[in-house]
Every structure is written in structure tokens, then in C-alpha cells.
Image (cartoon, rainbow, N blue to C red; front, side, top):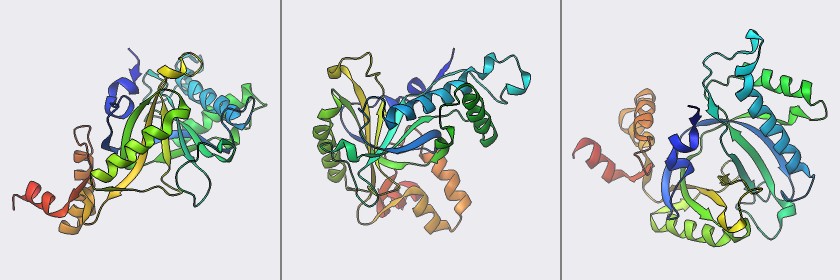
Length: 264
């Protein structure tokens, strides 16, 4: 059976409609940057979709190649993950203004399996370009995204109704002692679980994430451990241990962590 990221990582792709604070691990994506209204027919966003899905399915279907040289080391069958997008209104402007879609700055992306190396990605781009010379494959790039701590919620309904859900999400984050951490490198993030071509607007499911940071005195587990031990390696190991799906938050009060970890 094909590996399905949505099913294996339900906390990241199938959250509840009640907000939560989660730690998102580092992932690798194929990504394309652009500007403009995603609803523009035949526009830049539509061209980006062709690139993203074309390269993604080139990787997935490599298993059927009759050329042994195109078989990928470590390959496992998988379902292509859902489309994702990072959104802003331009450099230095946090958040999104839904009333001015033509001014959207976006990075559209699709998660890649762990076996996709730089070499595999270069092959996939070249292979897709050979079959679709009209596409500007140079726009597509590998994006290693370590998102970290976010406030997350499932929005159900039309995309234009998202502002109400975003307001609830942001209020929840603040109520839990977090501050929004929106800037150029950490943007409004959406994951499109539903296919808008098939689902009715009222049935669309979209995961919304807002990057967050701890409030006064808040530290990440890894930051605290590095401060206490001075050992980045140990902190990195424990970061992996505590960023599992069981960890719903990566930020803790310093005194709480010391008590919890060291029994002080």
C-alpha cells in the first residue's frame, strides 16, 4: 500500500477545527515563487501548479521507468502530498490581505519524500522539461523548510471565509502565551486538503498555520537544554525526541521545564 503522508501524520494534515500549538518538523519540498491572484485563469499561479505537480509525479512514477538508471535509491511508493502555500503581501509586510489578492506574494509547494536528494531532484526537473519544453522548470527549486512552532487549525468552508478562522487562531495563540511570529521567512501557511475542482466551497478543508514564538520567559526545549548543558548535539537529539507527534507544544516556561525534566 502506498505511503500516505496525510494518514501517517494526521496531526499535521488532519487537525481539528479547534486551534492547537504544534511543532512541525523539517521537510523537503519542490517549490515555486510568484506574485498575483491565484484565481487568475491561465495566470502565473496556474503555471506554477503545472510545474509542481509535473515534477512531483515524475518522481512518483519513476518506479515504472524501463531505464534502470532512473530507478531511485531508497524509493518507496507513496501518495503525492497535498499542495501547500506560504502567503504574504510582500517583503516586510506580515500576514495577508484577502481583499487584495492581486498583491499576494506566494510560495507554492508540494512535499517530497525523504529519498529525494539534490541529484534526484535535478533528474526530475530535466525529465519533466524534456517532455514539456514550454515550461520554465528553472522556476522550481528544492526548499528545505524547518517550520518549527506554529498555531494550527482546520478551516472548513470557502477560502474567502478564512479571515474569521484566522482571527480565532490568532486569539487562541495569544491566550496560550504565544506571540505571532509572521515575517519574511515565516509566513501565513495553508495546506489544501480538498481539491477545489471537485469539492463544493462549503466542504473545502484547509489547514491554516501561523508561526508563533514563546512569550516572555518562554524557551524552546532545545534552547533551554543548550543553555543548561552547552551541548548542541545533546540538544539536537532531545529536540528530535520531543518534537514527535505526542508533543503538542515546543515552547515552555523555563521553570516548568526544569521541574519537568530535572525534578527540581
